[in-house]
Length: 192
Image 1: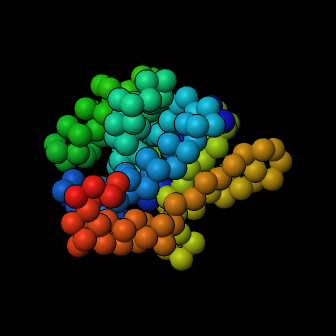
Image 2 (image 1 turned 90 degrees about the vertical axis):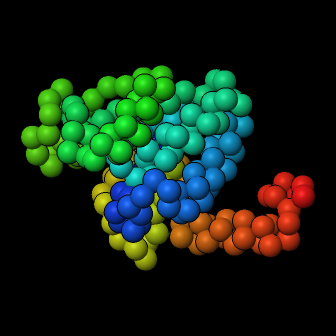
Image 3 (image 1 turned 180 degrees about the vertical axis):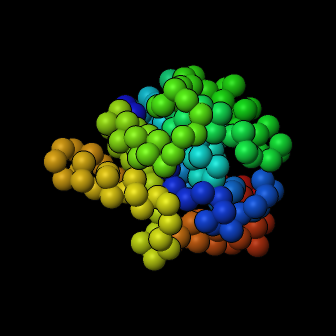
């Protein structure tokens, strides 16, 4: 598995409206944990479309892992040009910092936003050009990731295409572990 597509909820679907939200750190930690396991199996590329939310946090997590795993690369392949133009200045700055550090940046459609079909084309293109999907999604909380999940399940039905999930339970377990470590005076590695 050389290329993994990472996606999940938009920030607003998770009720996250600030870059300082504590949930972001938990999400990044969960993504890193899954990516490290994949790195041991030959992972070379993390692919995202740069959507505001899980995808940008995954990109940031990949860039942080790159410091330890030099072979890891980040690709940001957007559905259309200038997808961030309607975002707040803070979000645009964050997005552009990630784009500048990515190893590959491109757009599926070579125009600005025209219509919802660009998101469908992006999903098809990214699934076609990846070996697995890492998806932050919970069946009990429907949201925008359901569309790419459905396509990925179709693809997995006809070829080898692993779908690795991170659920609300996984995130809660990580948060509980962190809280327990803080209460005991130890970090997650057992050091005080």
